[in-house]
Image (cartoon, rainbow over all chains, first blue to last red; front, side):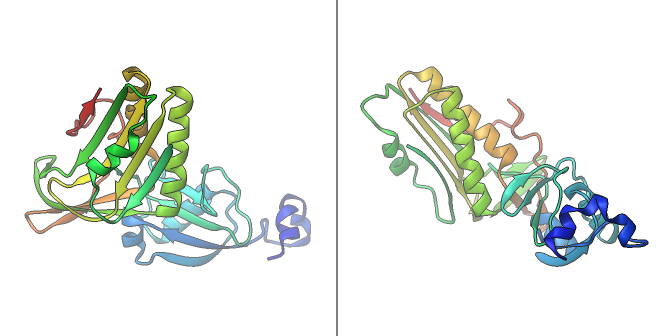
Length: 102
Length: 154
């Protein structure tokens, strides 16, 4: 999906018929208990989620083991991120289950 | 010196402590987190730490920089293990040296508490019963929530 379409997401709905949002292609990585719940350490997904939180909710529908995001952490492109962070085409999204260092 | 490292090998406390030394410092505080043989009533055989090192090291350095802003010190280091650990092994080591003891105590406490809450590190416990579970350790960073053996030099 072209980056220009991503930027104008909110203005172009009239041009794309029934699709109210643009799909973005993302790489998702899972760690620890999330990896075991999903059964893979990474996957490619296309999503129209507006934020990391929405993406997590969307993925948890097919993987009930993805839960408790309030205690989990998210990183985008190797930077710690907020759950409200927007997603852009090509982003790598890392879902970290509740951490337990020390 | 400010350093954060993830190590797949055993932590050598004595060698690390020597690196804290400097003529400006009159105090050093070292915290060691050890692998316990029990957790919430279950007998633990060993632990496994999964670490996402690229972000753990980046975030670990941020934590040490924050501590430096709050409690000025001369040197601080934090080393966290990855992989399989046996009972009694050192899982995490935090050392701070400073001009006076107050900053060293406070900075050391800040670093270990924040490290437990923020670093992408996960702990799997293997029990004597043959079971294994990922530990949900959300409260470990709260003061006094989980006493772990440590030692201080000041």
